[in-house]
Image (cartoon, rainbow, N blue to C red; front, side, top):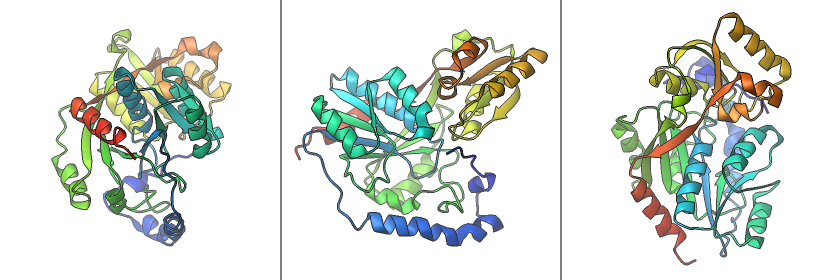
Length: 318
């Protein structure tokens, strides 16, 4: 499913189009109500962590999943990442596969069965908070601090999979920021009013391979991710000279002609080409030498506190 987020979703207040679509949010409400009627299964022999969101796309789930995976590996836990199989989300699966051990299957219960057979201690799911079948040991909700909840309405009137009050049932919030020194006091206060016990951690995006690029060069950037605006902002924050931008739908499956057209434009205007690593994995191999990607890492404020928090949950006896 290739999907381009409507601009009105991120307005400060709902506009007339959002209100027009409001009756359709009843379908989401019914789905949430039904999912709450049935008990979810808790798995005793393996600890389950879910990195998800209630805002649709662009919240930093996959970078957070990879970061927590590495932190737990460094602590000598036998951990594996997991991604439910969706044909249109193979970019995220490939990114996880390139940087971690990962299991994928058509159901999350089947993924857990495979992890148990391989004697993993911990499994980290990239996405799945809205799964109707699993009671995770630890539930993370990711937000982009700039968008947060957009206009505050459910899909399709707004960008929310669940209403903001659903934070009452989750354990931790991860805030993705562009700037390391961002002031999140107001956002944290709003979240704490909903769930005073929830843990909140600020993160910011760091470009690991920044020395590879000359900031004096002119760049054409392109991306097909949930929040292309955030990608551009990260580059601008790091002084890249962006001349042109091409935006595709989230999880867009690039055709050769798409990439060839981008290369043609860049060559004509003497621009270098940059994309995200998530987009880069989908580019045909014979065209990759013409394109660079930024290798990002998620830096976590109070990292030690986050590790202790995770360990306090995963070391609990069921």
